[in-house]
Length: 255
Ligand code: ADP
Ligand code: MG
Ligand code: MG
Image (cartoon, rainbow, N blue to C red; front, side):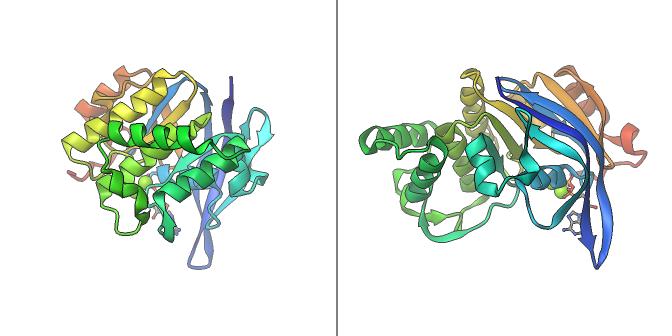
């Protein structure tokens, strides 16, 4: 069973020439088969955690470790991270003009599996995953993320997740900007992957509403750059009822 360990992670960003510490000692262990939710107010550093693990150049790790089965993730290239079994869906996915969704998925699958998937079974796999996510087959010919609506981006993320079958997946704000139908479809995709028992998921979100569809095994409250409380699914209900005020001392904006 693969295990992602985040140990005392400290991360800074360059804020107009001055380093600013955003992550102030994050400790978290995610095992294959587990679903963790990280919940916290806007600006608490949730995306910074995701970007740091993804290896985004804007974020400098100043202390701590990220290990996948004991291997140092932070010294891996972005490709190596994917091949090691990490899947990182970003809050603001990049556009890849000229590369179709179909090509992108097949290239990714080839890189991760170490060999090209057999074309015939692959096409079936892609078509069936797209149908389950209620995606138009024509979508596979579009350029990656170019002009995608919010909902299309999220479905595309979950399509990748289902086809690439990573060991550990980080999903940042997969629920934001989705209407109720899209939220349900996307959640069902996450749940299918979860039921396989082969994927550990770290679901990062500001909202509690996705947790009506996905029941996490663990909920962690994130505030001011670290995890300040951990519990089971019941903690999400407490957050729904009481908000983040008790953790921040600041009344949240009503969004
Ligand atoms: P969240 O995802 O929880 O809303 P973020 O990780 O996006 O929080 O941001 C955490 C804090 O770090 C915020 O105060 C944000 O302004 C700051 N921050 C994040 N990225 C940068 C950056 N590239 N440059 C300057 N400040 C940043
Ligand atoms: Mg934010
Ligand atoms: Mg964020």
